[in-house]
Length: 552
Image (tube, rainbow, N blue to C red):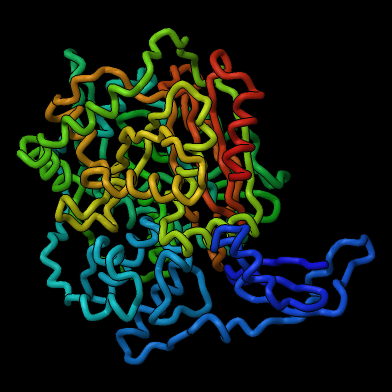
């Protein structure tokens, strides 16, 4: 008999009897990432009273024997290792540990770059992608000259490509929000909280943005002056232990384009809950990581880190980039991918309230297996997930999907690590499979396709909304977005739990996508939610797709 467990991202096999030759035998049958790193011989497999394997009674393994941990050799390496440990939430990171193999991804790379800037060092994201260990990175670090202006931005700002696409595609402008609920204990100091909210409102220019639509339906984006006070509504529900759904849903309906944010503090029986709602036009997933960190810092009375380049500078760079020869050369690439999309005009568009949902959850062990695959194939987690999706979509008409990226790419020569705004990119990717059905070939093929996308997809939105060079009207009906590991703020002040924060999007809006797949790793679980058009796809078909996605 035998049992395999996952510990510290390593597979450990416990075998009753002789383990000689087992590894060699497995190499003939399994891909390398599924072969255990350790084989331990035991006399019997310990069982619990329910007859299940008693993992706690299995002998401990000294992981350091094989992990090859190399300690930092100087102060700078030590400081960088501490940043890696903080961002990746690991107890120790050696200077030869590979960033992607220990759980890194592109959003975590942004966070590391941001924290290095606080230390006074500049690091381009692409440098971390090319030099993936601390030992290789440290010699490349340059002292930051910090030539970035720290003035408050006030005045008109052009719309970014994703903002333009929003106003073009949506009708229920006012109701398209992002939100969180933060839990704090009853010792929370309300004055300090109000001051912290005011600090982040004044520090991050885009939180002061508002929008005006003139008679000709032209949209103007304007950043207002800083404020001397912030409105924090307080609602006392001392008999309750949670906030009712209707109350939260109504908060979202009170957001508009003139005041696109709302802060509400609920006093419950045993805790405070802070609802923060911000219109999506002002923020994206990376923005929230910055905002929550800054809220905590400011509440503790600590100064906020220096600003990175402003959203205003970003849109001006995009505007210039729109007429560059380099970008115009990309148009053929995007038009060719779009030409592969099936004609889907016959599909009936439905309102958000008519969409159905399906969910899938991976266990911690399955998530560790995916990370093991990353090590074996030298990939990012998105490559593995998209490879699985390409197999799951094999019998679907459309193989071209919209892929979401964070949009803060080095190609623009700006540092946007700590800038609040909606930078998201959405661009078409062809996941149509080759003849091969061998998983390792599929992973390599998808990895190659993703890595060969020009400038990480930034150009598609610019060409479509600024240069108007995307000639093909068809767009994908399937979208995929993996948000990465969501930080669960488990510190002494604010805790970000996995709880309902209100209806973020209007139910009356027509959905532009027929299968919308969103995933993240949160609370030790990798999970995906699919919103789908049930007039076109049956529940059985979606569940079947998700099952193939999971077992792949």
